Length: 286
Length: 167
Image (tube, rainbow over all chains, first blue to last red; front, side):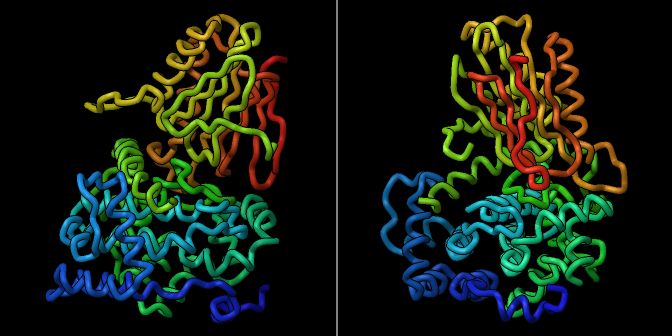
């Protein structure tokens, strides 16, 4: 295990998800100055599986539309490009995020719940602070733990020992990963993100979400995800065997213009937002 | 335990059962689960709280959300099912918190949740029979209302019997 490099982890992991090409094309198109409903609909329509999932989500109870949306261009117009962007990412990532990750003590759908929770929390913080576009925050939150997907199979027989080691040495779980392996799931996630050709801002989130103060230059997007990750861990949203064995940087709150004393209120607001968005999650589960 | 039908009590929720059945909470973080039993009336209940108390201008939308409102409501709902508010027994589980070297009290949510729960239980003269709180682990609790046994599961300790609320 100790001799495995990050490159080995990425190249030798079976079932490592491939880049969600259509969802990323939708992301790029919605970010571009020339992106429009028609061009976004065209991208989605070229991926039949994604188109079907988008339509199913658009017709879910979450949106509560009075009539059925029957084609993708209509879905884009009715829902708006921002929602369709988020829906594309949700639809593309759910199939592999809903699998169990035994190496992190995550039952089926736990990684999904956690990732979706961090997406919702990041979006909420972005909306409250105005520091980053909310749709970017949603995507960043959704993908932040991608490295765990690559690492899990290699940790399956080692998780309990890793947590005990962390307890004995008073380490965070990512410290324990680095001590035993030489790298942590965040570093591996950064490499996978680069392999997927994700924007550098998203790669930074994957790489630095547990050590936001080390991201140079500082990134508000990383800070949003760090705080949202804390909210999810505290509220037990998709909590794994590593529990709450992570550090929290109060500097992220200061950079985002939030106060430590606001955390309880933010926690409550997050849970309200998460419960509202769960309807979307329920639609995707069917 | 794996074949038992457990009624999961979601965050901010309260559930009461009479005579038999299982109640549970999965992967508690800083939240706290409070299992209560009236052994004489065979009425048991579980609350899953998120925060110690409502604050500021915040409206109270769900009584099950806060320790100070959830526990009195749990006792009230148990009494409606025939329990007495005298001689209740409790188990308290959860209240983990992030490892944080800064020591900021606002990040001490797990500790504050547990403190609030214990204070409310003491005010209501509820005897706490079992407690597993603090630290960083995710905890899963199962409460067998018929036997009064509270089971606890964590990654490093596995499945264990925390206590019996009939003892």
